[in-house]
Image (tube, rainbow, N blue to C red; front, top):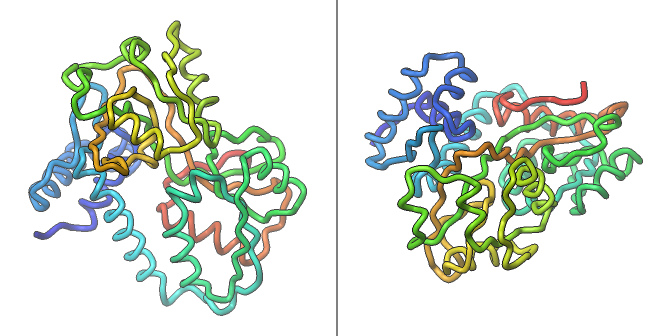
Length: 306
């Protein structure tokens, strides 16, 4: 089995955007080049990484499993390339970093580990809190930076943010759900199903925003702050949900399979990134972390508030 870094980069771009055409735009290459690279990667891995749909692509079960490995490969290569450039011992001091629940559990740990290995003289002081409390602490100067869902930020006048990853939202279904056989799935169809609503990190508020753009409402049968509870209930066939790929895992704690499908209606992505106070003068540890995260994600994110 052999594959190239180019194939991995093209695969990650397609996974993040959900569209081969958009991945090609962001990579500044032709759409055919992205398509060819993904086909070569699938052939080398002997696995189908994407499900193709009329409105784009979504990760298959094998694709979800490979995505994190692909990100780790790109990060490791990036670290090796800049190993001789980073004056790691020259950056010292404490970094007060706020995190929200979702990024703490599903996004940040591996990146914190690598950052600490790269900058051993930086002391990380971590605190988890709801988004509103983190915004207040950033503005008050009690936190240097925060890693959180930038798509939920409210105080855009006082804060600057850089989005690092855009995680697409998909419909989660049990293995035997009838909608798996549908060629196209709309929010109108989802509204007829019992719906499990996640509430943590303002997930319910976000869901209400895009449902409010339609004349339909989800038929909620249960609300919970536990992602694992949602996973178990969906896998058991008790309802469906719409959640991001960041928190998706193909199996529940009971070992039951969860499938995902794309939606025809526009559903916004869940974006994660770094935020800081607009007028803050970032100390070297904070600047090192911000630069590290930006490089790790190849500068693919977007900065808001500059």
